[in-house]
Image 1 (cartoon, rainbow, N blue to C red):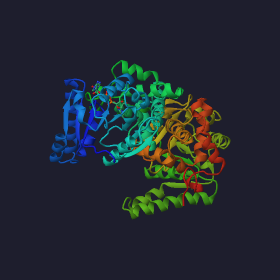
Image 2: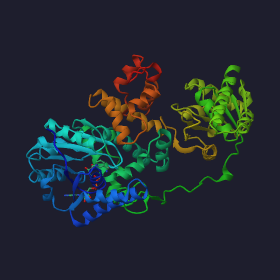
Image 3: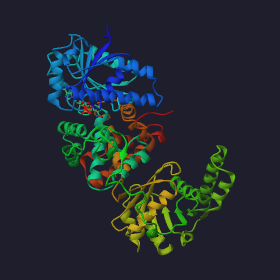
Image 4: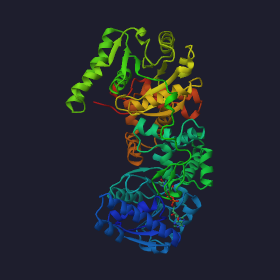
Length: 592
Ligand SMILES: NC(=O)c1ccc[n+]([C@@H]2O[C@H](COP(=O)([O-])OP(=O)(O)OC[C@H]3O[C@@H](n4cnc5c(N)ncnc54)[C@H](O)[C@@H]3O)[C@@H](O)[C@H]2O)c1
């Protein structure tokens, strides 16, 4: 017979605990909400009230329902009040000794059939369990932040947890409308084990001034469709909690990439713990506010001095593939005259035909007028000769991803293009300086990395080399804005921002699958419902192509020599077997 849960306890009403209280109360379960002292209890009440008021004011909850919900919650500072709870979930700070003490105390308070759960993100549940007299009834119940919103719950069973205990907790999580996955006791479980390597990597990019906080966050939002950028997410999680999670992961796995970036510890010591204190990577309107306010690091609205920009009216594009065609369309749509160069009349005609087709669809859907479509086509001219690029102000190339081929092109562009013209590449993996170096004008060479499909994706990485002139970078940033895209700036390193942050995380997911810790389905569920990512890692790998993913991962490994970036053997094997993802109908999954 499975357990009935009519009354549960939640200990610690901070970032997570207050949300967990709300989750239970929303489902008409009586909750005993416990804090360490009266002051903390008042703060915890405040979190719940603020969350309910927000839900009511946004029309997501009726006032009556909010009142009913509140009626299910009793506040106390006495753990002994948990005596008649069938389940108690602790959500106190991420410190092993504290959690052990709380659970062993609760063990002497609750009834013999009650379950004790820890919401730890990374600490060993087994070690917490054995601090109690009855470790069989101890389980991990790891909610995600914000608990009332995110559906994912990791149920952690240790080698000692009784089957009925984790099964009942899983069933309860389902009753709460969550998507629970049962996993073993490993630091970071599924979601954090994959998330925190990525977050730590973003912090190290910030710390080394590779890119600004705004650009790092915008890159992942606009380049990958993530709901939040990594630094904003760390502020939400809390830097103190993040530090403890990374530290535990590092101690368990000794993976250098999990060693907390030094700046995290410094920020915690300085009290810059994120939203909860009002200061983290960003500054907020006040403690626990989500509203970012300007500070000394906030970039000026338009930092570029227009007078210092190179005038751009006429744009050249080289190539006729998916990216080149998309880029031609983006510029022409934004009102620029575009001259594009392809390798044959058929390819020149192909680019135009594709744009005509896209226009027709836009007209059908009422998103474009026939006159605008006509005008757009009027701004286009195609050629098979690079000499046609003599008078353009900037050339963006999107030809084959091969260094020798691109270097030939850059030698040619250097010969053909007028003095002062900017030479841009949309390479995703080649060193841009190797293209600049074959020209007589390395200061005019820059990266302009569009994302696929270029017409849709808002992000453009503007990549400067050690030789790029500042006015060239500034002009390309301004041009990116002028075509309605979001520019982020970074240096000429393998993977730039997005791929360097994305692919090691995907590779980690493959290693987790390879280690049989969790299935591809569970890992995808974890990242989608626990972190709000638009796709799970295996879905995304199959879409991107396993061969492409392997090539990028190899480049990252070769450039940074990080052992942790070495491609997962399973990825190598799948590629060798010809299982490349959707395009071959088989990758991590099989497609019809
Ligand atoms: N922040 C996240 O995104 C997140 C997500 C999932 C899980 N977690 C985990 O949840 C737990 C809590 O993290 P948080 O971010 O909510 O921390 P927090 O610092 O925001 O809240 C912790 C709360 O526990 C209270 N507390 C401390 N000692 C106590 C005691 N002896 N008895 C009762 N209450 C006590 C504190 O007053 C505070 O309100 C940690 O184990 C963390 O790893 C955090």
